[in-house]
Image (cartoon, rainbow, N blue to C red):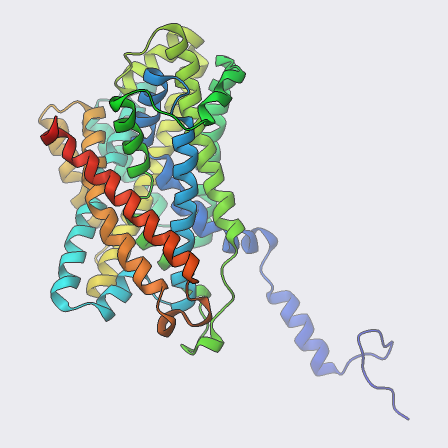
Length: 429
């Protein structure tokens, strides 16, 4: 009686099976590529959470209030993980990005409005990143700000040449830049010698209306709308070939997003800890600009700490600028089914940054203004995301549970409310 083939049978498999097996093994991508496939999209969007605007906000919070608002950064990071998970799930379940779904399911007028505000968000994002990179080049090499903006734009465009054809290399480079930022601030923290008092910052509390206002700014600027659009596009290649619910893939692993945004959260928390340990505890609580922060670090901790700060800022400016332009491409492609060369988008976003600097606006102030513009776009990204992920006809088995929908609605309402509070402050005094 012939022996049947089993996994533990010594009988060799048929030639066709052996060839197929060898071919499958040969076609299997290398381990580093499989790793970036799983974690790459999350690391790309995580760069939005350590952009130059975060440098300015976290440094001001630490210098002014010490460790007081450390818990706000931690809480904001948890909310960001939740929102980005919903965005990643939307792309994986439907095979389409959030802008594409808006075009397919929203009335034409509403779709046009959503596109316009999303483009404003993309431009405001690039404004912050370009100016942040220019400040870093000025701190490191003394390059004037306007040429620095041009250099930052050119380098970010080179990074974008890796995406989407070389998407995995692009993701790997950005993950490396995130590591540079984190290591830079850990080095500063080591030199600053923060004490166990930093743990007191994890206890939720405020110190007056001004601290509440700054806390609102930290939370409101955390969920960047452009990466809500982008993340859904980066994960859409995980969707199955059929739109039927049974053919859709498993829910994307939460650990991808948790790992990437934990790195970003640690970087942000370390920024505040360093500012608190170096400036606040020594009576230097009037640090309002990135130039002042750099000079203060150099004077109090030495040249190495100042250089680490500037290098981290440069990595943040270059990486987040490329992510912002990439998101702008996804926004136009999704809402309008139109594409323009990346070089054209890069050139267009230079105009606002150059104009503000030529007009003489203080660079850190320009970063703050860009965050205000970004806050306008948050509700218009979060609420469509909530609606679409709650539809079983779109999500199939990956549709939100009722608890998830309630939590998402609360998060969207909280973030939107805080941003309205921020925007109303100039008028309410």
